Image 1 (cartoon, rainbow, N blue to C red):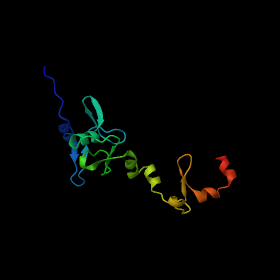
Image 2: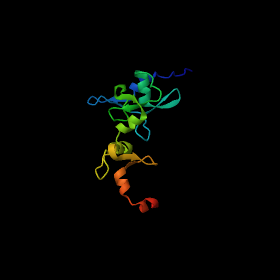
Image 3: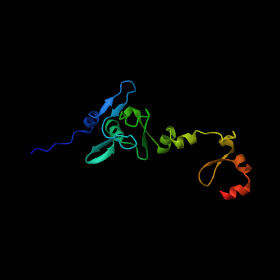
Image 4: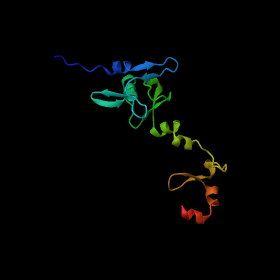
Length: 142
């Protein structure tokens, strides 16, 4: 009886991608998690496929950094499309609610947050002139 040796990781990755000539993406054909990121099993451990691809073709991901898909395609494994960066910067480069809120520079009345803004106890941005205009009685109710 012969035991099957594990296939090298780079061959397993190449065996499960479909290169896109126009975008340069390497679209992963294996299983995806609920967020659309590829999953691959290496040494009996399930890992995110884009992280495995980066480590095989580029090297270790620096401690404290996450990988950003510059192509914005979550199932892409092309290491040229993966950039290590702080998670905060990765989130702000995206299109989610945090990124959208960070792009707002003025309150609804047109006051610039850079001049008139502050952060309240909840961590929300507040416009000082607009906040001062709210009657104190209604502030106590909230």
